[in-house]
Length: 335
Image (cartoon, rainbow, N blue to C red; front, side, top):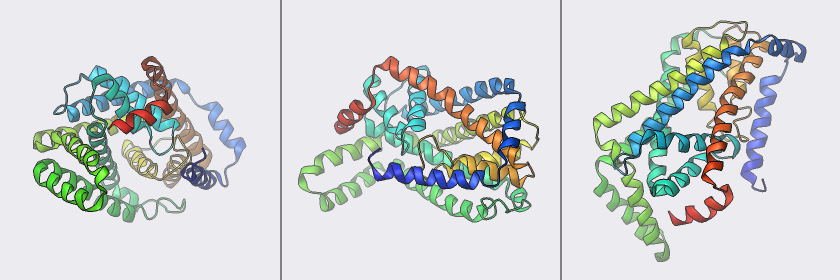
């Protein structure tokens, strides 16, 4: 909490919360919350956990060339990562799950992080695909909310960034020896001699983590599972919607899912406070949902996405007997 990055995230979250809640009548919002039929959260949470299991399977698939680990082993580690992302800043859960996997399966942290970065790139590509599938619909929406109007331009820039990163990783995976030589050339010229051996070792382990991308079939499977993961998460949006008095199409919720998750890449307070809520309310408002209902739905959805996986991840972390600060300070130095 003493670091400036934490307080920057808090400030950004505060701005987004202000944008989300300005003009909101709290009495109407509270009535929406009280009138919701919360039984719909149960199938929503269930389908979400199916998506988390598919995430664990995807990670098992990406790590296959490094070490074959059953999906049932990967699932608790995946939930720990979610928990870390939800309560620590800067998506620190990604490092946490790499550390836990090293403890459990002796997989180098740098190799795990390579696969995690690949996951995030594919997630970004799918999120942008959700936006692009709905561009004709998006063009008909009002931009009065302030978030929706220029999303086409943002999507174009984001597509270039994610596809560029994906292309770079695919090239690094397909030509590991060339990449290693180029990397070593940079290490030898840019780093002091005392760091070269360690950084070189990290680079080689990182390249090992990209091995799954050397097969076109593997790349296709990772993309297909990524699409399935986000369709299942949109399914949770759909179930939670039935708890409230409004109705939009599944494609509209895909668009909301895509925009919201792209927005959560913006630095914020832990748990994506504000950066999740403001864009979600804005998209629903653009579809004609009144502000109180949109705010109530988005808040409940946010809690339903955050709380169950955080509790499960905390349970698995406690079962591992890991103390967050100690594990990161000591084990990440041994990458």
